[in-house]
Image (cartoon, rainbow, N blue to C red; front, side, top):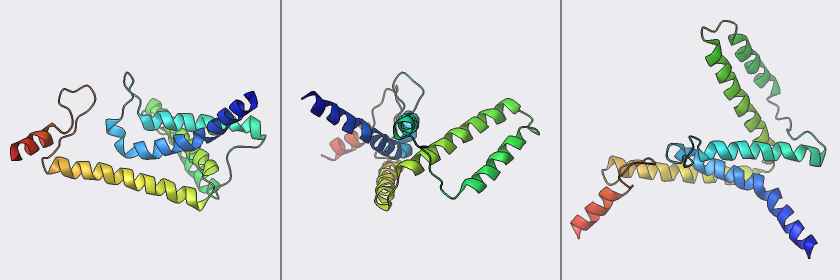
Length: 172
């Protein structure tokens, strides 16, 4: 009985990168509105970090390098070298180094996604999820522009949709 429980937990943990990738893709268009309470971190950034950690954590288990070749190594290396050389002529080296760190994070994320998304079906599903999430943000933007809603950020006093509720109540 313990083996079944352990295998189901292991099965769930093996699917964690997939769910983290879905969370990252779905939350990206909503980034302005989805800060994790009590932090200044977005759900997208948290899911991205956990996704990278989950991909890298498989490295010792699978005994193979977790990042696969994408065919874009030379252009990426050329761009990275250009970024590194930009530090030499930078007026604000601290800001340039911070941007290099951001670039390195996105580079690792790119290779982590490339290592995890291995089929056309996965890529299509992720693109469809991203498109639907963008459509939701777009629909809310149109509703805000039409005056039916107005956006509300966390820790403000007016909840999203109050104007629509007042409009509907006024029409009734």
